[in-house]
Length: 524
Image (cartoon, rainbow, N blue to C red; front, top):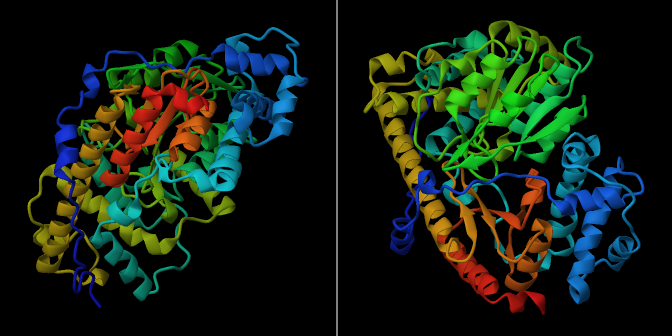
């Protein structure tokens, strides 16, 4: 059976008019002149100072949670942890730089991250969880894969395309990714030799850290990880060598990389940053990114996690991203709402990809081969969107191998549906993000995101983001994500994910507004 015979019907995506009206009032990211910076505060230093063993991440976690339980008083759930905190005392002086360079700090945040999901949000506190603003992902049942990509999965399975393959992925899919990425750059810099298909962002960073830092000669200093960041990524690097966390400030939707540039040395083996930060949605300054790449020595590898760089204005990416010491990571998890597929790609120099082939073929083989058709079609259609193609013709049909048995009519119908779904999805998710941020800004300090579906919200009256999560969940039924879980160490910063139905977002906004406006409600 040919691909798209017949093409599936694309879903319709709409946004309520009251959400659009609220979004129209939202402040743009470039007008948000307050600076957000995940600096270390006294509460983190106090926990480290009280630990019997400051290198024990589990003790740090339990002390942090114990303080929260102690402060919750009658609402505490774990009296043993509260007693642990009350029995502790300050044992040493600790400075911010010591905390940022400690292996235990990274592991502590990762263990707190584990506790949040395993023991609290989906554990003992699950019954309180009524409105979920903490997922960090798009609601895939409403804004999931476009119909054309689902057709690709069915087609590949029907053709039994799930056998062994090149550990870098099939060449047509890699060619399609290279062409798509070239369309986003100042000029063409990639071909299939610069691409390897991978198994999603988190797995990819972990295997890159293993490949780059395990058993290899080179710089021996600490790796630099810009924060905010995602704990599994930083922990993956920290397991292979020393790490120094570098707080990066953001203003008006842009993240400054100046602190990373200043922290670089000839002994730095690796730098890892998110080009659009989680949870702020702030984008790296492209000129500063170019400076960082040029300032790094040839033996310093720079990993760019680009997975959150979506849902914002399209911009041309500088060719510095294609430098031989840069590895770019993308996945289908965010932009295409498919985190469970565990598929994506890396872009790097040809020599790097050739060496990575050996590592991949030894460590995991390759990603699921029946998904190569999804990646190929996605990359080709995304390139057509970027270049402004209205309707594919004979030249576009010729991009696909004969096994697909495509013709211009079926491909044209599939592309029209894909284009409409992608435009409606981006329009809807942007409107929901803007509307939610505007509503919450009436009672909290919202760092307006320029990209992504997440927003960082500093709730007045709290100096601990985990305590803030617990209080808000207990009194409102709204689950938020504590900022400390992304290395936002100071204040009551929580992350809200705005890719939810408007009815849920509006109800959550009302509940949070009431709770914050009437703080006594939270202290009963």
